[in-house]
Amino acid sequence: MLVLFGQPENWHEQDFRAVDDRVRGGQSTSHLTAEKGNGSDSYARFWGTLDTKTLGGAGFASQATNIPNRKWNLREFEGIEINIAKSDNFKYTFIIKDDHQTKNDDERSTLSYEYDFSPSFSKEDQSIYVPFSDFRPTYRGRPVEGAPPLDTSEIVQFSFMIRSFFDSQSGDFELLLKSVRAKPKYTPHQADLSEKQLYSTEEKTDNGLLSYCLCQ
Image 1 (cartoon, rainbow, N blue to C red):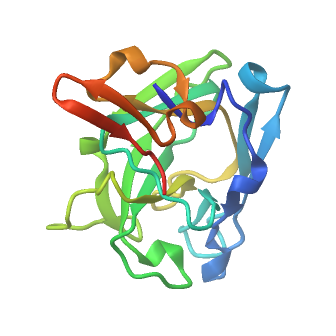
Image 2: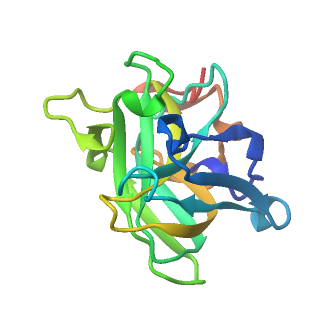
């Protein structure tokens, strides 16, 4: 597995920023804070308050990657694994954006590729695996028919989001994250290498050189 964020590396709060419904006049808030120890003992706490009253039943809170000029090339990978240390009863959304879109002030007003997940209410570790093919294209949370597939070679942003789902959930939330990893297509022997180890390296295969230039 390729580690994108978290264990066995540290989580870095500065790599994320809030993108909440306050951009539309709402009152929801979100935070992502690094918790507990270093390396294999590090966690990220995604927490805050989802408000649905201000916007009449709507609301969202999210933490998006905030790494200028960073791109992830995951074309040799088949999906994302989210490893969770503790969860509540809320439904969450993991979002990916590629580079093929027009930028504007409201980041929700661009095409996103989303997957909704509902972790078990538990203090026990759990993992959620999502193939890239299961991420659905959306615009402001609504499905988009005929959209191009996610370009995994040009990923520019990852986000964790909680939304109201038409006023079906609200209140204080907390999700404790261990790591986010990418599962390789063809190289199982590369398991548990960090992104730093794979960055700009090459591996010889039967068909020549397989590049692992994972970010630009």
